[in-house]
Image (cartoon, rainbow, N blue to C red; front, side, top):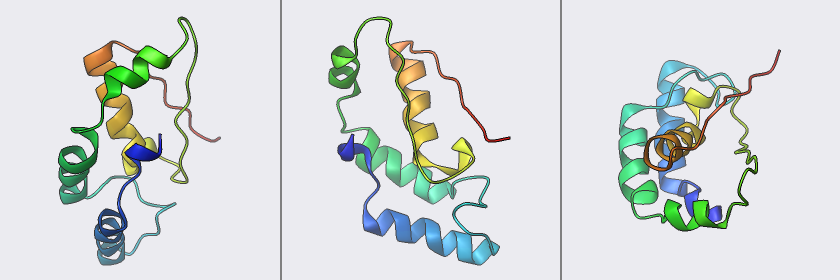
Length: 97
């Protein structure tokens, strides 16, 4: 799913917000609103999730991984929510601990 990766510009937008809040990417608990809006508009909206869903084996389990601990602090939460809302896929966020 490399087509769903944020651009360098978007990552830097989030890093600037992290710096402003004094948190690292593994410590952040939420995405910057501007990052979430732009990621959705620039990356997620044009991506054909329907084609991706069609490639999944019936009854299979799929995982989205990233370096951030909290899903709310990562673009994968935006992807997962879209998969749930538009394609009816169940979503379970796994957390360490």
